[in-house]
Length: 255
Image (tube, rainbow, N blue to C red; front, side, top):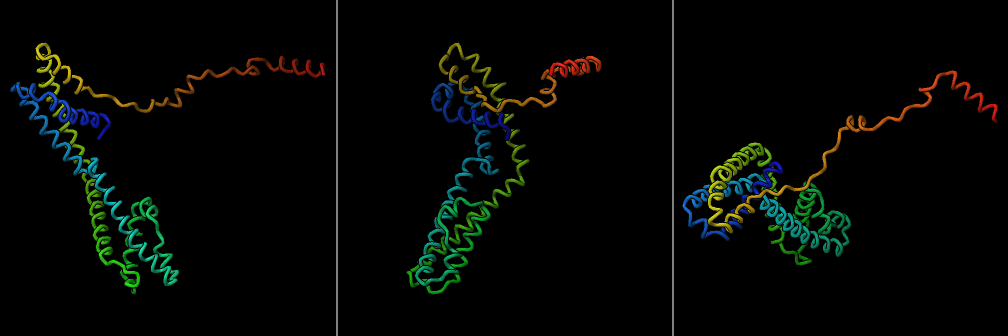
């Protein structure tokens, strides 16, 4: 999704969630506006669902972040129990294998974080005598389930990457349909009603305004920069060889 399409989608969501609830009586009171807005909102709902399915929506990011936090917390609890058991029994190998804090798990790269969580789970399953520290076996079940949930989310993201072109094409198509509805049907209707319903039409035109975000300034080409710079003339190239020798002789005599 390009920046322009993202701004258009943001405007459409604002039109649905902010403009329509505030001007519901006005929109529902005019049959033509009601039909057009119904068609528009159906397409906006499809767009939001596609964003979530494609793994580019805020819902997917929040879901994955929550799953990562839950996984790291459960892995840290298991590692803390193993670490306490290793310190009591003076098992240095076990202590070095599970000596992780929450930040070591959460702030690490995704594959490394998953490998550490799996290592903690395997170590806990192989370690005997954990009843000495009253280790809760339900923690292992929770850790195993959280690892599977996170891997399923990763698989969902990989599938969405494979279908990225398909989702982008469908999103662009639906956005074009929405903008055509606004430009060809809804906006002319609101212009005609602006004299009778000034406040509502003013709210509409302020809602559909796409605000451009500030971006980087366009860098000039190096060739253009070199052409724009004025090259300083070489004084020696402008003088003849005899004049240069005469000048050197004058300097030598002066010394």
